[in-house]
Length: 344
Ligand SMILES: C[S@@+](CC[C@H](N)C(=O)[O-])C[C@H]1O[C@@H](n2cnc3c(N)ncnc32)[C@H](O)[C@@H]1O
Image (cartoon, rainbow, N blue to C red; front, side, top):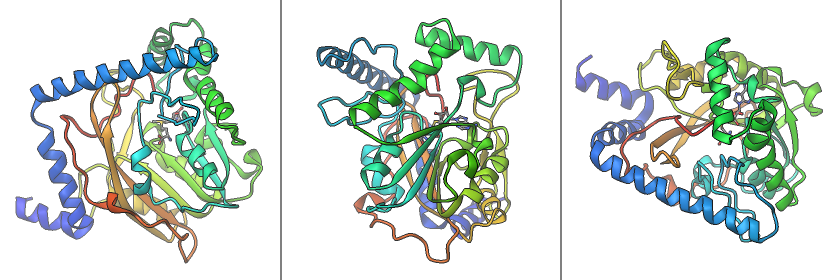
């Protein structure tokens, strides 16, 4: 396909904002030298944040929590802010969650440190957060591949059992935040595939959020098929979208031929593929409502995710007004669209 044809195709399928996003991505995967400088600065700043947080928590009587892994930055409102790999605080308006979620039943799937779940609760929702029963339940090939990943996680946390990894990686940080925030969020331990109304004790949810989980599943369609019957309102997906294909629904395999780097990521759909899957599962409207980009800590990679709203109801939920943040992204670091985060 010639360049001008590609440009027309992108505008036709993704609009001007899609074109801008692709140009920004392409432009910034270049200057490795400055990227290395910036990466070291991100790492240094992050290490300072972690040690300040640990020292402050210790001084406040929380004991030694050095082994905890903070996926999200969560402001605990008592002078403590967890040093997360992802700090989504300034990006919240981009997701266009309803400002007032009073009385809504909300499900946050693959919630990690629960930044989003706590925010839904703060806005008035009844929230159930879903996390894996065990770190071993990640979709991973059996045998040596899986064994090495689990050993790496144990080494990262300096522990010798899977149960300890589960605690320091997922359950401990969540419980710590839940207590500090005096939260009533209920946590359900399940894989995305095994979710059901019966298991959750709720017939249907007004809003389901699934952020950066589908790429970690061997079967994204099966994962979405588990969520679809549970959603009576809006499903909000935050995900990397593949750039390939205009007018063709494509799922790009990113798992490689052998174990390396981020070894638990498998698939990225393009926009049309995600849209068609969601429509096949009964969603009436599917729209990319925005993007969010940021810098992954401590690695310093730039990520870029799309935010997709899929609605079951004829009239979508009243959404909050996207503020000035809604303009296209400004990216100032080297690499883009990566999932190489530590340990997760
Ligand atoms: C990349 S993190 C995303 C965290 C959060 N949803 C966000 O958007 O910031 C993926 C989370 O999904 C969980 N996860 C991975 N595979 C899963 C599966 N098959 N079912 C449910 N959760 C899963 C992981 O434990 C991890 O906490």
